[in-house]
Structures are given as C-alpha cells and as structure tokens.
Length: 364
Image (cartoon, rainbow, N blue to C red; front, side):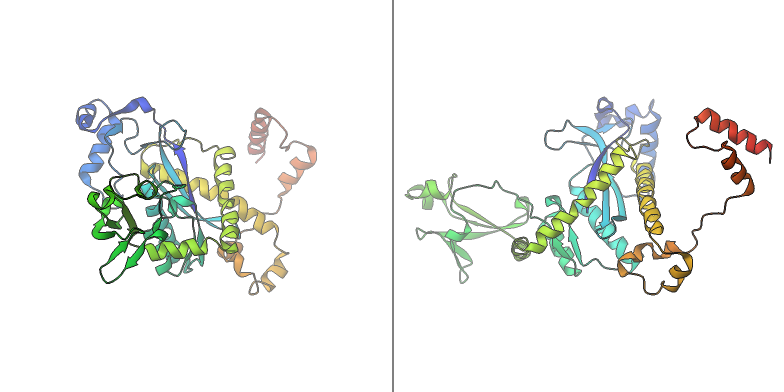
C-alpha cells in the first residue's frame, strides 16, 4: 500500500482566503458550483479537509509540500496492490494531506474484503502508515503489519531513555536513577495520545546528572496508549520476514512510475475530487488491463485451459472471473486482403491510416 502525489489542474496563484469565496463566486463559475455543492450537503461525497486558503480553479485541491519539494496544489492517488501479481486491487483518491493516507487505507482494505471475500494475511507499507492506532486496527482484523513505526520525536538523542527508569506499579509512577519520582499526569491528546509521567522543577534543579537526563527544566516520559502494539511492531521489524516484505513493497513504486512515465498522469486533467477520482480509477484500470493481457498470453490453449480450470493456482484468483468470455475475433476476409496487399500496416503515418479507414468504409 502506498500513495503518490498528483498535481491538480490549478495554479498556486489561484488560492484566496476562504472567507472571500462568497465574493469570488459572483464572477467565478467553479467557486459558485463548489458552494452550491456544499449547500446541498451530499452525504455520499465525503467532505475534504478545510484549508485557510482555497483555489478558485479547483476548490478541492490541497496545498501540499514534502521534503524539499515546492508546495503545489494536488491530490493523493492511493493504491492497494497484490504482491504476487502486481494487480491493483484498491484505488482511492483523496486530497493531498498526510492524515488522509490511513483513512484511505482503511477504506481500500474494507472494500477489498467486501468485494472479493478475502482478507489479506499481511500488509506492507512505509512509515507514513506506522501509527499505533492503524497497527491495532490491522491486528484486530487478523492482518499482520510489516510497517516501520512513525517516529514522533527526534532520534539519536543521547539523553536518558526509558530503560534508565524503573516502573513502580503500586503508585503508577517511574523512578529515576537518582531516586526521584516521576508521577503520572494523565493522557495528553496533543502528545499523540500518550501517557505522561513527569517530575518537578524542584526535583531536577539540583540533580548532578540533569545534563545527561534532560535538556528541559524537568524530566518527562511519554508512553503511547498503544505501546504494546508498538512494541510488537518493533520486535516484528527485526525479523527476516520484515525485510522481505519491505523489498516486495517496492513493487508498488514501479506502478507509480508507470503511472507518471507511461500513462503520463503527472497532472490531473479534471477538477474537483469526484472527477479526479474517476481519472485515477481509469488509469488503474489501464494498468491492470496490461497485466491481464500478459496473464492471458501465458495461458495454455483453450481446451487445456478449460480442462485445468479447477486446478488453477490460488494466486491467480484475482483474474479468474475475467478468463472466460475474452476471445480475439478471427481475421475477416477483408482484413486478410488488406494485410496481404500491404494496405494495413501499423508503420503507416496517421494520414495514410485515415485514408485506409475511408477506403475500407467505402468498400463496405
């Protein structure tokens, strides 16, 4: 599973403050239609996340940047892929926001189970999906996640870690190496839904090892509410299966490379999320058709194919419903005549091909 950024058909200069949409709608047809859709409140179409500034060209497009990229308006094209066949089994179009990746992941997995009646045994993804609540959601459905954990805090810190503190269950607190107590302060939603254990300034002010323990005025320990799930993920990610699944996960990068370089979907041609979704679905269908052709070309002759239908490999079940009913028509006499005389040649220019089509129509 992964997602790729696709630039919207809108310029960055088209963004205006949201409070000015009513004024812009008087002269801009796209904004007027957008506001009309909001008034109708179509429940079938999920509302995209609200932004302070909105594009007057494509109001659903989100302003997004990643790493050293310059900020652009666009969408996320999310894929769920079967590793064995590289077949796309789930497509979800979302606004370009990191928070939408996990939402789309749950949607695609739920749709896959409902449509195919199959539950994936494993799921591989990058660290963007490595949140504890998503890992818990997968484990509750019997799906083993091979996903690196998302780091919420800087790594490489040489200060005292959790292993230097002793948990005291009778008081629900931690004891530091110097004998001071870090009391439980509750759950802080702003700290990624974590349990907070904290000392006081008075306890840490005169400590001789304060520079080795913390850079703040007091020591604070953050324990995620789903720490057990995160610990299981850490242990799983040290095993050979994790590295094997992560290598297989890179196959999905080839799909996105094909999407941008072969299908040339570097920029959306349509506007609004509901229309961009159709374009993403059509592009994924084209990619799957290429794999279907390769699959059918590897099949034995028709008689053997029908005789061996029941013993087909389980890994090819994704294309099983498509196997029967697809047949190439036999060449007609007119087609054979054109092919023999050299009038039907794929190397001819478009103008010559157009003339051949007109001749074929005139001759019936």
